[in-house]
Length: 559
Image (cartoon, rainbow, N blue to C red; front, side, top):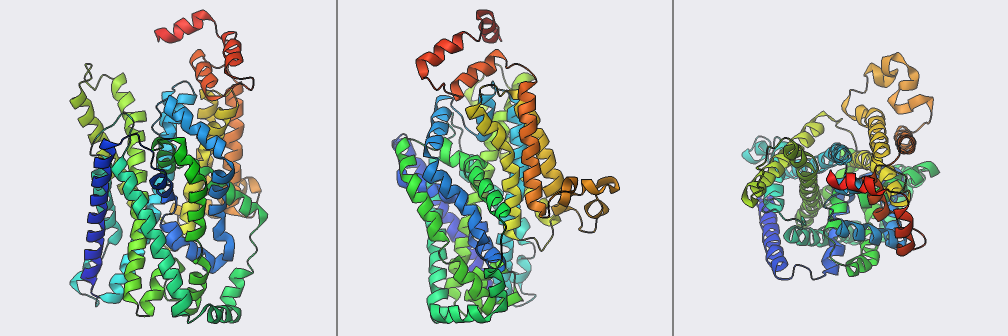
């Protein structure tokens, strides 16, 4: 198989996705409100990115079953958090919410500051995650190109900067997929159908590779087990003792991420059409997560025995078929990896572009009268689309820069957890806003800002600075208690330490800020919508009338 086949495969695959998206858009125009439980449940599997397809195997080869932590949280949420999910969807439909930033802003009195800050956090938190996909795509394509093309050949030279080429192509795909039109509900039927199809492709590819490795390349599961007993690296991975603290941190982060990642909120909440879709997803999505992890350990341990350190453990899924001369399975692995990565990048960038346009740029334009006052549809639509397309290009450019700056030996799983920790900074304001009426915009802003700053210092900074930097070794300004890895001199796990401190600081300032002033009338109106009274709707209305004066209501309406 020549290197040109790699290019042809990628182009054919993308063309196939465009055809699926076009079919979905046409069907959506005909039956726009018809529930599609299967498509919805499968589209939720956008959670499974190249981190799942490649990174879980790499982590399992080093730490055994620790990779399961990022799936336990989502499974628990969908099995036992069904009422919470249903409530979030109902609120979003009633308030015409189109993003996670929109949800937070709506809860806190339609606050522009809350929406803008949430958008910034989501953007900074998603950039490393997109860089993860670039790293996976670049690694897999470079491995294939090196295997099939002679050094110095035109094809090998053409793959010289795969990440840059991938960034440009993914930006183009995201623009073509997600910014073809504007819609008040921000529904993208074609995009959702394409994501659902990609979920089937990556699951089928991973199961096919797993079965081939386990039952054919390793001769039999028994032979694989014998090799596992004799290999010291595999024994070390199986005997790895992940701390209870790490299990809790990873499980909590993944449980938060399945709701609050911009792409997950967009698919699970914005694209939801009926509660029937949630009902099916409550068991189908957890089942999907179980299936896609069935062969992680066999592939990881087969990779240790067959591939070893000849390539990164994150690429064992691709390297095993290559080294065994199974070019068909290598191509299947490439397609599966592309499915996992492209779906995430496209939906995440589209979701972020919606947030940037709706929650930051357009409100600023309105305040400064940049847009025409008469609000002509054509003028609005064109400007919104231009803003979103520019946003997508900037997001992919920033992700490429981060990819270039981060350490080359960083595992895919580490980058993914970094993004999870950033998105977790929404949790106090998001969950607190659903259960605590006194929470207000000041608390949400103070909490998210403080938590995000702590995340950036303890977790983001070490990934983009040289390891021998003095501030990383001795602490900021030479103060040991300002060492990002052991902030305030506590903890022995840098990641857990950063997550715990960022969420603790976030929660403290969220509560402190909310208690530091009374909620405004608009905040109290929104709080009454988002936090139901225990005694029911009618008593809730009577009690609500005693907390806001007529003059306050008139003042709010006049504004």
